[in-house]
Amino acid sequence: MQPEIHFRRNSELVPIPTYQTPGAVGFDIAVSEVCEIPPHETKIIATGLFIAVPKDMVLILAARSSVSKKGLMLANGIGVIDQDYSGPTDEIKLAFHNLTEKTYTTAVGERLAQGLFMPVIKASFVEKEILATESRGGFGSTGDK
Image 1 (cartoon, rainbow, N blue to C red):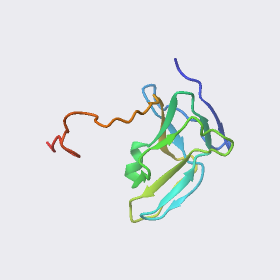
Image 2: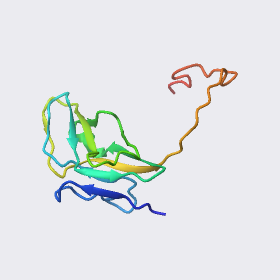
Image 3: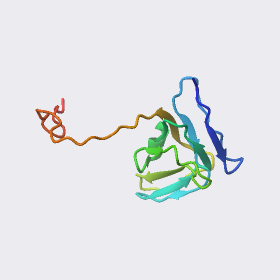
């Protein structure tokens, strides 16, 4: 069953979230402002989108593949939008870092990120003295082959 996602835009210029192809799992997210990102700096850019994430789901924000060609990356790797981030001022924003030696200027409507809705399972944590009888060997213990 396809969930119904409630959202609003702060301007008619903000594109409605859209899956670009029938097989796309992420919908494109555009920025709603012109923003200059100087070399090796990070800027937070507005999208003009407010999205109510359904119960038992999370909205994951990821960079579009084409962003790497522009010398940009999401500064936090991915974004996690919780179910309770849907108030009147809870606009989706993107933190982009410029990896290049030139200032990058965004354009209104430029698609820079994608959103993926995913199911969430909340765990209950129980502290135990011993978790396993053997250790794997630490970070990177399976080798570099």
